[in-house]
Image 1 (spheres, helix red, strand yellow):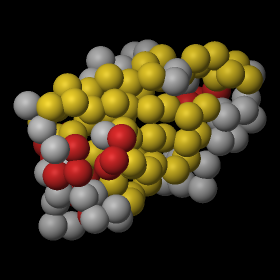
Image 2 (tube, helix red, strand yellow):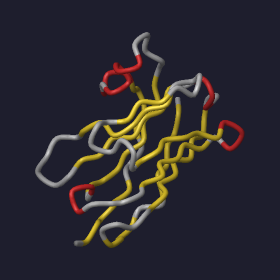
Image 3 (cartoon, rainbow, N blue to C red):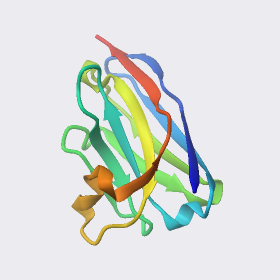
Length: 126
């Protein structure tokens, strides 16, 4: 069992930056693949970024070169650094914990994750 709590969301102007955090408690954080997903109003939840136990990362094309996922296993914390934010990045952002998949791109699937946080709102104004 893993408990996940996101923080760091807020209101920011287009072009600005935010850093999301996801604090994990419970079983060994380092044993889990971690991911960020987001859900905009009226849309389905979508993949943002993932990081496996070996620190390999995978980012959605829509955020590549703007967002960076990272983890600090000593602090049981997952991060998402978001730069050059756009109004279309407005969404509730969720972190998730799960298992490594053999193929990195499969970390983009929700089925790879067993535990989810409650989400944090990110709003980007134009």
